[in-house]
Length: 88
View 1 (cartoon, one colour):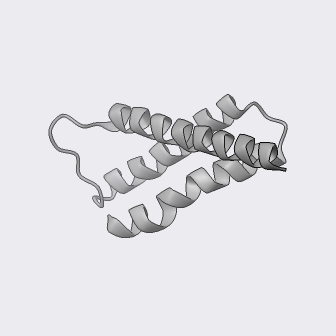
View 2 (view 1 turned 90 degrees about the horizontal axis):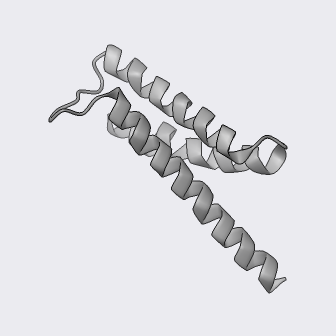
């Protein structure tokens, strides 16, 4: 499970920010889409036995946690972007 945390899952928020910069799609729609993508990837890992849930955790909570993570990543990007545009 550790390679997925260090490899695939951190790259997805970077792709989210890249996609929001390169397309005219609504960022909230993209956050939802990327959240679904991460949840789908984890559900595949769950099905093949690479991920196990304990203590009442399930895919719904996974979706919520990824939604929060993607939203915070995008929010952080907006903060950095606004500070860099003020400095210019």
